[in-house]
Amino acid sequence: MITNGAGQPCGLVTNIQKYTIHDGPGIRTEIFFKGCPMHCLWCSNPETLSPRQQLGVYPKKCLGVEKCGYCLKACPLGAETPIRFEEGQLQPVVMTGACRDCLACADACPAKALMVWGKKMTVDELMKVIVEDRSFYARTGGGVTLNGGEVMLQWEFAELLLQACRQAHIHTCVESALYCPPEHLERVLKYTDLLITDIKHMDTDVHKALTGVGNERILDNIRLAARMGMRMVVRTPVVPDRNNSEENIRAIAAFLRDEVGGAVIQYQLLPYRKMGTEKYETLGMPYPLGEDYKPPERAEWEARLLELKRIVREEYGVPAEAGSSQKLPV
Image (cartoon, rainbow, N blue to C red):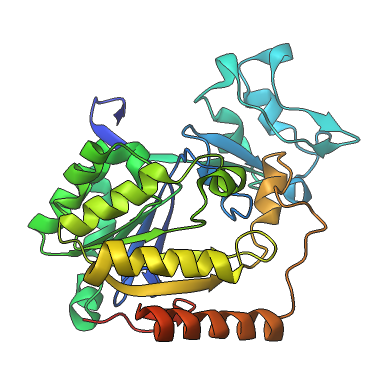
């Protein structure tokens, strides 16, 4: 588990979003953890993939090395600095070796052209943020949602935070791909009121091609969560030409009907949206689906999702919805 300078357990957090309404019931505070063992081709949050702090670079904000150059002056590595300029433009920073965890350059940048992805936060620091909106949770049936990246990479800290939320009588939701050891999952789910997970493809070889890992462990953990009596929302990001075949959606629906049963309170078919491309650029990473990849027009994918929803509902009896905006059953 990560610790701070005082030796306190910490989570590495990339973002905190207040007043979210799509990742669990009611109005929620959503905590995004850093690090993910999967690399989905359509991932829109590349800043959450690495389990360590990173520097994101926004060249358009940079004042230039001649006018400013504070980042270079702040870097203790001197000539060995990983900070580079080409034709006066700040380039992506690869944090390696002695550069790790310094971040002095970002602190010195007056234009915020350097952004630190990943902040160490203790349970007390996060709870201070979470309880600020307790009145909204009470009025709407909301609470806190832990998301990623992958929450389960930081399962020990997640368990501590969820325990604190439970003690404060705050509803808890965990959103996880469930690619994790089952014993870790059991520990976390003890303090979780709702689980959100996804099934991207039922063919494990295709799943590996799309995400970097097979699906066997994921499906086993979904079965485990069902045996534990966990209420679940299951999602499929429907990506054209990758996993949007009727055959795949039918296979997922059959799995949910036959092996998970009433544990699934809603199955959501999510539209693919090309998002996060700027964040890939800040990290010097190519967009995995390719810069030229374009989704179909809204009318086309909307009709497709509605047809898949009809099939899943009428032929498999699974409570499917197109998108994530439909209210969850109480």
